[in-house]
Length: 159
Figure 1: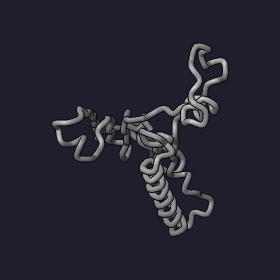
Figure 2 (figure 1 turned 60 degrees about the vertical axis):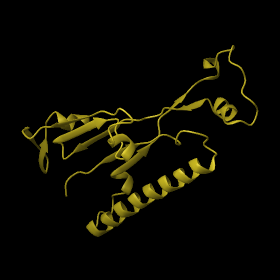
Figure 3 (figure 1 turned 45 degrees about the vertical axis):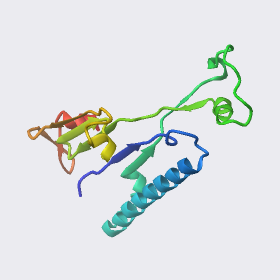
């Protein structure tokens, strides 16, 4: 019965042509993964009888973008070919911010941040150069807040 939150930040689409078959297939599997996560959280909420709760209270999936105004587009910039992906992006004035870092806080005691993926390419050691940092704070103070105690350590502040 402890607080539980997961914040996931993903790119709007994987690298490459967002309309391509491979990209669309990856997006479909990503969508189905998030759908499964929300469904499982929803079932756990039902089992606990938390009638006022919603899966979004526990899981938040976000995509970062930058939105420009028409005056932000330089006059010297060539117009992209019509009906191209670049033309659609230019028309929307919204551009993806690609997030490559991974970050997690566990039980307000352990934090990990880095760029490494959990796959052969990142973990092999002779291909990509990846970095991660972990920190553990086993000793921290607790503060009484309403119904119980709350951890007041430095790791918790990264939430």
